[in-house]
Picture 1 (cartoon, rainbow, N blue to C red):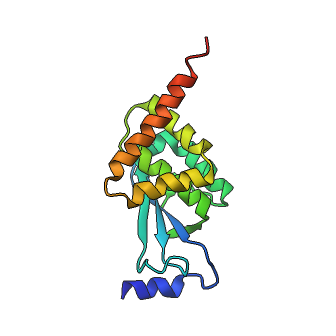
Picture 2 (picture 1 turned 180 degrees about the vertical axis):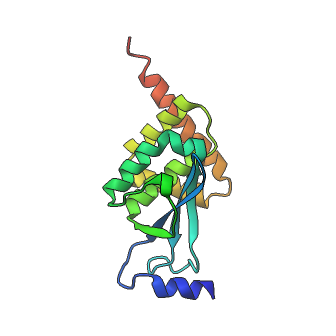
Amino acid sequence: MRSVAWRNRMPESTSTPQYTIRFRRHGPADSEIEVWQVPSPATPQLKEPLRVAGLRGRNLELVEHRVLRRLAAAGITVDLANAAGDGRSLDEESALRLGLLFRVLAPMRHRDRMRAVAEGVGAMGREEAAYWLGMAMHRKNPRRVLTALRILLTESQATSGLGQG
């Protein structure tokens, strides 16, 4: 029954996957942003919304300015202090980049490495971001894929700084 409601609300004339972004406030300095893929003609295998990724709390605060800048470029303005609500439509490229960023950063704790990873994801091309997100979502062991990406992005940042000085 749940899937029928989503089918009634989905756009009829689109041939690209559809995404929404949801905002939730859990308490003071504890906001959450989630990217969801919703059923559309381009994704007939989806019968109900699929959570792509989410980020909450301290890790979100560290990259909040990047996320809000990406959302503003997509035409979405958000006040995370008063965040609440269903989903707002999000374009595919922004959904890919934010989904990948959220999945990669979620378990991280080291600020400098998080910054390096966020910069690396921001510098990726659309195809590269889609490749890594697809690997992270559809592999048997997505943690290995995300660990490999973290290593690649933090090592490349560390080696690029060696030649300076």
